[in-house]
Image (cartoon, rainbow, N blue to C red; front, top):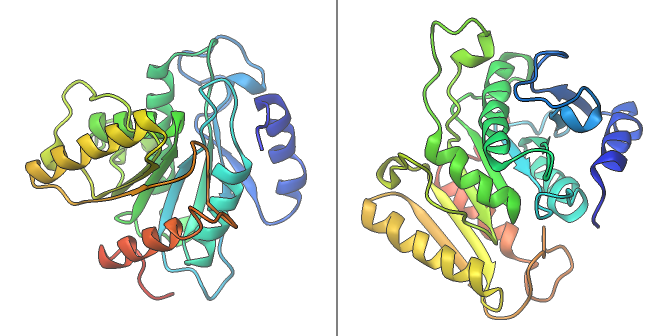
Length: 265
């Protein structure tokens, strides 16, 4: 389900917040870097999805939906994925980032890193382990995710903004049909554990995934890849799909093996 950003902002600011979900701005009003206006399209935010009490295990994930950087696929690449993570005991944060042509890729990368910092800064509030903050991106969101990991850095202890004192590096990375390009200064040896998934017929992403997987393994990083023989671009969570319905189950095992899905606290 493709949803325009305006409609999505209204939906996520209304009906979802009325329940257990709510929004967290990445920056305070009037302090959003590189903003070209002050409307709903100019203020990136996270929408919080929490597991039921008694099931929460301290894990967290930032979810960046795709949509070719001109819209956001909130359904199968946002809400569905958040619900699946919740079933694993993980608190999910769906990222609403600024889009083209109004904003360029460097803005989205900045927002992805800021999202990780915001989550870590609120670890006490949400009872999260700041060392188990993952990042999953789909398509355009996946391309950005690689740059988020490749250009992330430790927090600046002297930053005037308290959120800037937290690390922007995800503890693990999930790239779904999109690997992007190497970021300046990217070091694959220090890349977080990375899970890659795509469909073989989706040639660009699948070949890119295969190349990145090989490069990560050569560099000594941890990586796992799944390229499905049939299917398409845009399968999202894969729920109900004959080709892709098991991929999130494979991701769950990857996260368990990496120590990112412990028992509930």
